[in-house]
Image (cartoon, rainbow, N blue to C red; front, side):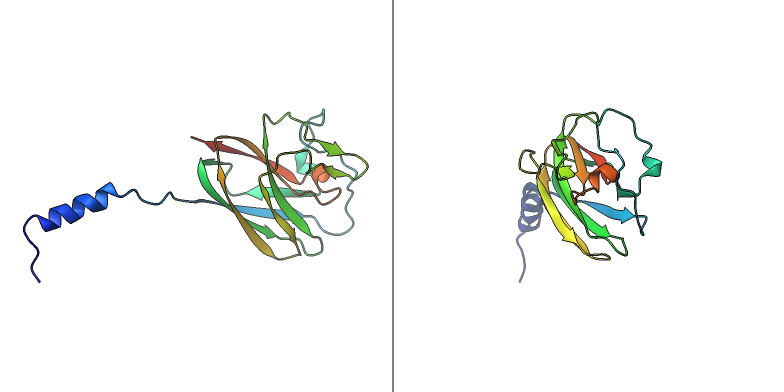
Length: 162
């Protein structure tokens, strides 16, 4: 079958006019702890009135990139612990000095009062999970809300740009 002389340029023009699907940014997240009997009495929560030495944190959240462009973002979370369950929650914040609503009697962030965007629920040691959400430009906190984990340093900040 022969195409008319104008058909190939026309097909090429149509292909250019169709927008490509928006690319999804992928962020690799590592949920970790130092194992064994950990001192979870630290006060290392974000904006808790002091600059904690996060190098002394017994657990944490690491990301392979701290900034992505607005749009769909997939967080691939892996719990690298050998003994503890961890989770990943994403919450918008105004600044790194913002204090998230904390329930002292439960030793965790008040998820009902906050505006979290989603989570990778409790991951057993060595397990992985993922969450894809559409994110607007802004500043965010990624944290584990298992009782005691947030205050033990299990959080990090994250920025979404235009």
